[in-house]
Length: 264
Image (tube, rainbow, N blue to C red; front, side):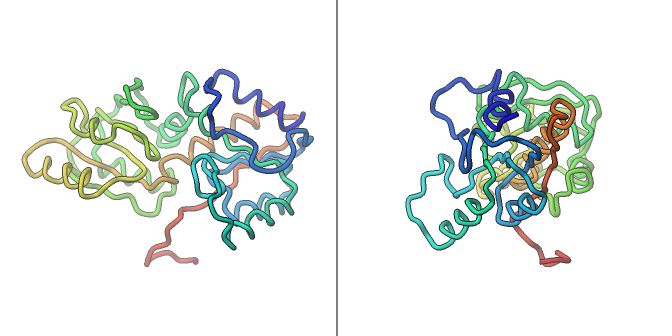
C-alpha cells in the first residue's frame, strides 16, 4: 500500500470542501508503507522517534509549521532546522484534521470519550467541532478531572466553577472550537470541557455562576490533552484494519512543563 492509498481510505466519508489543511506536508504520496506512525503534533521529538522506529509515514492532527494552513511567512532558523530534519527523515507527513472532524462521527471527541470511559449519547451543535454529551453516569467535575488526569495522562486539569455537584449534561468543546461561550451560558449545559479558554471570559463566568448558586463548570484540559486521544484511537483502528503495515502511536507529550514535572 502506498501513502496516497491510505490517505484516500481514511479521508473517505469526511471533509468535502476543496479548501483544507489536510495535505501532505513532506515526502512522497507514492511512498510504500511498511510502518505508519500516528501522533498529535509533529514535534521535533516525535519526528525523531518516528525516524528511529523506521516509519515511512507520519500522520499528525495539528500544524507542523505553526500556522493552521501551513503558510510560512518567515523562514526562521527554527523552521529551517525543523524542515531539514523532516526532509532528512524521508517520511511522508500527512495532516489528518478536517476529514477527521467532519466524518459522520467526529473521531476526536469519540476518542476522548472512549478513553475517559464515559457512556452516553452525543449530538451535534450549530458550532464547528462542538457537541453536547449526555452521560449515563452522573459525575462531578472533580471526579471527571481526576479521571482525565488518570486515563488521559493530563498533568494538570483546571476547574472553574462547581466542583462537587453531580452532573450529566456536558458540552464537548475539545481543542479550540467555536461556540464555547454560547454553550457555557446554556441552561441545559452543566459542564463544558475544552482545550483552551479565555480566562477572563469563560473562567470568570463559570466562577460567578457557581457563586450565585448555578450548577456550572468549565474544565480546561489543554489543547493536546483534549484531542490527542482521537489520534490514539485512530492508531488502534489502523492496526486492526491494515495489517499489511505496522502502526504505532507516538506520544507527543504536553507543551508545558510544571514545577512538579520530574523530567525536562
